[in-house]
Structures are given as structure tokens and as C-alpha cells.
Image 1 (cartoon, rainbow, N blue to C red):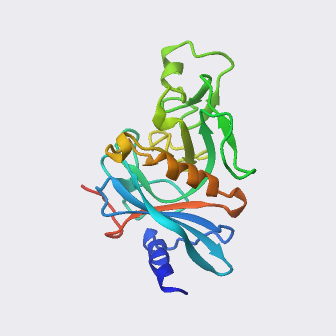
Image 2: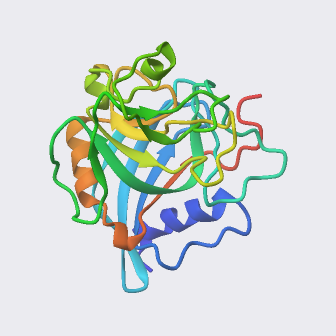
Length: 237
């Protein structure tokens, strides 16, 4: 195993005891924040070649939720009594998550043929209402939005930061926990990175387009995101 791969596997071991890396996964984006309250993240793409993982390309910078990280609901087991992601807490979910599905304003984008992409219309909703049975799900209306509720859930808001987004499967269907956090994506950062997000992982438009183009759904890509100062149970109590 080459020396530069060691930090990557150390990161996986610190996610939670008993975590087993899916054997079918051959792509991984690793995000490392300085600590659990940091809204900055360093991102690095990895791919598996044979039995070894290797870094692909140079690392790049991104932004997280304004309040940093907190354990999310993904493939990993969370530490006992750990604080976890809540709707509106301003934190990015940490752990190991599947990546899949892109949405955007353009008719087409550069991507793998098997990566699902949908051009967002005014009828596309992503439900953030905790009381809704469609919470944290994509809904397509059969009509243009009419009610204040429908308009509040719209994905298309003429917002440049959301002109392209890639889904991070935190608290994802079919096992959605009401109130445990919704609408977690990779999307374009605001003010050229000067602004934190509400809980998503954001980056420059160029970096996001490159990330989307790198995703190969047949290789089961995953997102591993943690803080470099180790396993936090309470995260900024």
C-alpha cells in the first residue's frame, strides 16, 4: 500500500467501529474538515485500482454548513449517544453516504451515461416539510405550483447556486426519518466560497462539474466526510 493512501484508510477506520466498506464501491470522495465546528472542507477524489485505492487529481476546497458537522444517517453506524443531524441545525451530515442523481437547469450536462440527470422545472419539488409524508423526497407535480406550500418546496428558484446539484444520500428513501435533515446535496458555493451553506457541501462551479463528470454509478461512488480531529460524539455541546 502506498504511503499517500494510508490517511484515507485511517479516515475510514475512524468513522465508527464495525463499519465495513462495501466491496462493490470503487469510487470515493473524501472530505476532511479541520474540526466538527468548521465550515471549510478539503475534498479529494479516490478510485480503486485492483486492490488498492489511489488519489485522482489534486484536492480542492469546499464549504459546509455554517455550524460545521454532525453525524448523519448513511451507511455507517453512529457512535452510541451521538448527536445527529436535525432539520435546520445548519450542520452538514458526517459519515459515509452514497452519491447519486443530478439535477440542474441545463438541458444536458457532461456526465456518465448511467448517471441519472433531470432538468429541473417549476413542477419539481424537494420536500423539506417535516410534517409531510413526502419529506426528503423528490416530487413532480402534475400542475404548476399553486399553493404557498408547493412554491416553498420548489427546486427551481432561479438561484445560481442550485443550477447544478448532486444528491448526497443522507436520510434517504426508503428509510426517511422525519426531522433528521433533508435536501442534502453538492451544489455551487455562494460568494465564491466566502459563504457557508445551510448543510450541503458546496464548491466552485468548475469543481462541481468535474465531480459530476467523474461519477460512475456502476462503481458505487461514496462520500466520506469527517473532521480531522477524530470521532466526535456530541459535536460541539
